[in-house]
Image (tube, rainbow, N blue to C red; front, side):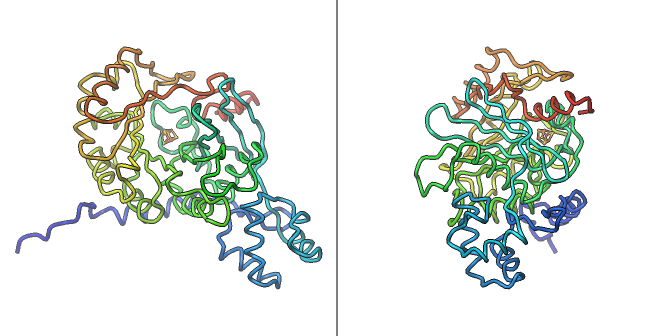
Length: 395
Ligand code: SF4
C-alpha cells in the first residue's frame, strides 16, 4: 500500500511542542505574591480574577469593575477605585495588590527612545524599550519574555547572558503597564485615538516561544477589549524559529510574526542562530508559509542583521528572495551594532545598499533600520549587561 501523504507539519513536531512546554516549566517564574501573602492581580485572566474575588466572598461583577480599574484606568491604589464602597476597597487592599515592576533605570535617548531596566520581586531584571515612531505620535514597546536567553545567537549581546528564568504573565504585562505609567497614558485610549505606546513587539530579551504559555496569557490580557484593548494587528511576536510553537501562536493568538532569519544558508545559520541545527531554514520557511495570520496587509517580517563579509553578499540577497518567494513578507535590514567582545563588524553602507536593492527589485520592502538610542546603550541586552558589570557582577 502506498504511504499516506504526510501533512506539511513534520511528524515529530507535536512531541517537540510538548518537550518545549515541559522545559519552559523548569524555568517557571515565582508566584506573583508578596511576602505578606497578598496576590498581585496583574496578570490574572478574567476567570482567575473572578475566582480570587469569589474567594474573599465578593460577587463576580466586582471582578469586572476591578479589571476596568486595573487595565483601563491604570489604577494601582484600591483607595482610588471609587466605584466601590470603602469597606470593599479596604478588603481588596488587605488581600491583593496591583503591582508594577520596580524601575531600576529609565533613560531617554536624544532620539527619544526610552529604555527601562525593570526589577521583579525576586530581584531578577529585564529590559524594556520604547521606540517612538519619528513620523507620528505613536511607537512600539519592545518587551522581554525571559531573563537571559538559551539560544546563544553568535551576534547577540543578550545571548551572552545565561537563562535565569522565564518571565511570568504579571511581569510581561507589568513591563507594558509600567512603560505606560512613565508616559502617563492612562486611561486606555479608545479605538483609534492616538496613543504613544501603540504597538507591542516581543523582541526584547529571550525567545518568546520558549515561554509560550506566559506570553500567550499576557497578550490575551493586553488584547482584551475592556482594558488595554490593543488589537492583534498591533502585536508582533519575534522568534528565532521555534517551528512547532509558531503553528500554535498563529492559530491561538493570530498576532503578527517576525522571524530572526539572519542567514539564508544552513551552514551559516547553524553558526549565527544555533537553533537552526534543530529547525533548519526549509522547515522554518514552511512554518512561515502556513502561518495563519499572514496576509498582504500583515506581512511576515524577516529580520536580517548585516554582518560584514559574512551574510551580506549579492548572492545571499538573491538566495533570500528565492527563499521567501510568494510569501507576504518584508525584510528588515539591521546594521550590526558591535558590543565588547563581539566577533563581527557591521556591513559597509555600500554593501547594505546593494543587498537592499536586490531585495526591493524582487518586490519586497527592505527598510534599513536606523540605529536607535545609541547614546543609552542601544543593543538588545546591553543595558542589563552594562548595569550588572557596573555593580561588579558578571554579565
Ligand atoms: S537574538 Fe534573540 S534568541 Fe538569539 S540569543 Fe539574542 S535574545 Fe536570544
